[in-house]
Amino acid sequence: MPHSNYFDAAADPTLHGARSAMPTKFGTPVYWRKRAEEARALAEDMNDAGAKRAMLIVAENYEKIARQAEAEEAGLTTPSPKSR
Image (cartoon, helix red, strand yellow):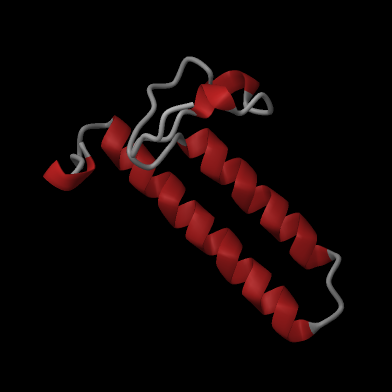
């Protein structure tokens, strides 16, 4: 598969509802929200407080990426010229 600066959600077979979504620079909100959910689930099972905090930060960062993807889909952001 050729390298691209744009995320292709259709390439992930676990994202059945995201296949019709337009790939964006940030991927699809569905993809990143799924990653955030997985990170939170991992954090729940962690016994080490520091590791749990770190995983929850990862989950929040995934949520931020999902919001960026939503904004891009809505036309509120545009890819930078370097990433086209």
